[in-house]
Image 1: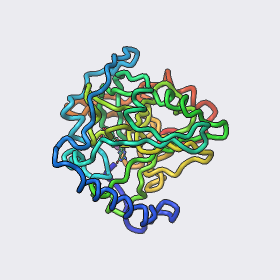
Image 2: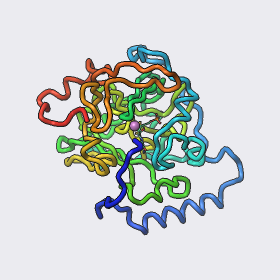
Image 3: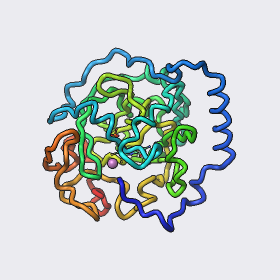
Length: 310
Ligand SMILES: Nc1nc2c(c(=O)[nH]1)N[C@H]1C(S)=C(S)[C@@H](COP(=O)(O)O)O[C@H]1N2
Ligand SMILES: [Mo]
């Protein structure tokens, strides 16, 4: 999403990271760098575990070339242009921890490799539709979010999930753009989290997930605009209140909470009727729910009064 109105925008106090936390983390990272051997392999991700493709999830169109999908990215922590992939290589993908907390029976902090060993890893081909009207078709390797939720067991009072992206100031120059409401938080409902489509990729094209695509761990909601699919997740919090989200805070009129794909509902500044397939010159019609209605439409019955599609 390239268009942001910067002036006059301020992060609410509650969302500003306490300075002690930032400097503490910086000091920690500096000492980690000093202690690290000079090898290029520091922080590399190990190969993906053996897994198979789940043929129930078909792209329905040609896969996007890997090179295109890994060099044309939105990841504002690294900068607000599409070419952040090179800079993103500086982010270590190991060690990596995921905290799952809030309204759950078993709050836990996982080392990512321990988590991967516990999860049913498989490959799925999904379409990803950015609100900017481009699309990719990607073979993701990962696990259903539902499998992780079954481990931590949300309490009945928990109604929403907040997904928080890592904040690593030493490698993420975008964090210096202080008009953004860092950290990047996106959110969904419990029903959406438990939907079988909601997926936590750890890989793409058979390789560990590249940093620029949200390695080592992200979430994807293939029926929603891409901005809902948070990258490089370090924390998932189950909560009672609807979380404040990154784009929803910046431009609530343009980026709603639900953000379900619908060709009939234009973005305030452009049509959503068609999409450009990245890496080609082909523009194809957009379909409602990005074509995933059979899985997801039922979740929105009775919510017709909400802005489901912006
Ligand atoms: N943390 C974080 N997650 C993010 C973004 C971002 O800027 N920061 N951009 C989003 C947007 S707008 C899109 S379209 C997708 C792009 O994912 P891709 O680069 O893997 O295609 O990531 C989403 N997740
Ligand atoms: Mo996007």
